[in-house]
Image (cartoon, rainbow, N blue to C red):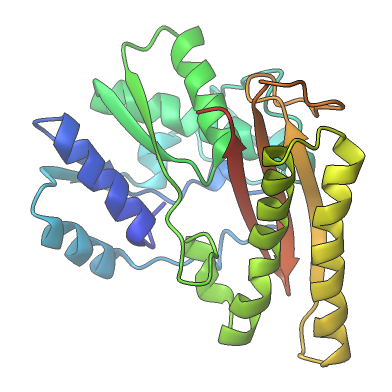
Length: 275
């Protein structure tokens, strides 16, 4: 969606290693925003994005469609007013991110299918930071028989562990420091799994403790913003359903979302699995 960072550029570099022709799409997709989300405020830095892509010296084309090109019937944010064709991947879109953002994956699936049809790629590249999105797109490719191989690039992080995201631009330096509570919580859960702990409640409780301590510190210091946990999850990497008992040898996606002020950040770590 633009506002490119090192994570995006790393995916472009991976694409250039696999493909003789590299096409990058930049499109802020209205269909994946709800009526009360940040569509109008979402950072748009097209000139800078194009300079970054040009500096890589491996991008053959940048596709910059207009909203009317992708949604010829228009795209009001209120779902009951929308007209046209939309795609939903049932079963793995409603949980996790879908709980807080119920229209999100409907919008993602629809725009990605349209981009696939327009560009006709042989390969597509997505980032691990959006783990559920990767699962949804992989299912979409399989279910709709797109002849496309999907690649997932590792999450790129800032020096303090915070996952790179376009929305990090909303965060002050102080906010960035405390935003790492999410990564620290996920790391603690993963370390617990690595040490043999398999009880879901015990694993999550360790993560909750880290978030609660950071939340308390921010409040006591009166920093002018709050931390609010949306969720922590230990889920099956295929179904994305919560794992009540993590069986020996079984993989898991450890994920979460945290509000830092009004900015919602997400992150995940993989345990004994791939996307």
